[in-house]
Image 1: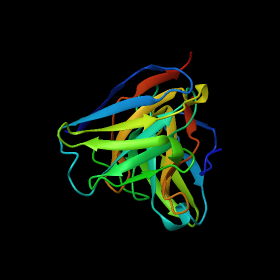
Image 2: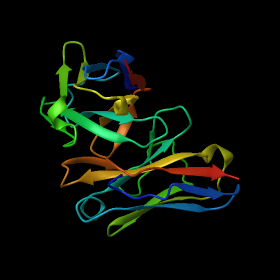
Image 3: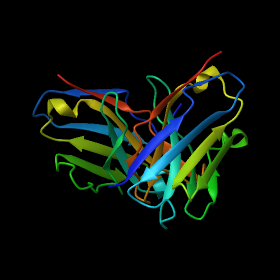
Image 4: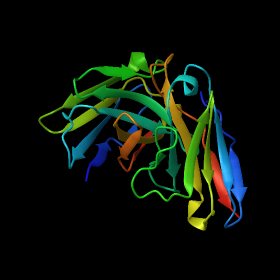
Length: 118
Length: 110
């Protein structure tokens, strides 16, 4: 069974770069037909898609974040990563990684809380 | 402000049928399929309905989805206490070139 697990810094200072990794187990990140996304949820609020990377390595980002986001993949470690630069307190949220098999996000990580604070 | 519009709350008593609406536009719901997610308190969202009206394995047939034009609906029949959760609709947006979510509906079982 596919499992995703987020990891990374839980506390980031304003204006610095948030870095997270999603480790995938029970399946290969290189399998065709899937995209791998980052999604966030501020406390008490809804879900926001940040961006995704396809098995080919091509990426697509939310236009509102595009200038600050980078998603990359490490096939040797079967994981993908998120970097979000120049963060503000408003970006305090639970960050999820998820797989999209074309019909929705069918597998999610448990989520990791990231707090932006000095 | 979410791209897709959902009522912030809904409620029902055990055994009742409730529906949750999701309104979009021609660039999202109007031209793409809709998925629904259930988020129990403190947990990650779970895919509940995909491609408008399909249930993943393990999802009870009490849950059903439909789509018409630029709107979609999630129906829950035979409401149970464990259905108390937040529900989100989602679809692809051709203008954004990415997935978009509704603001979520908090379902309370009275």
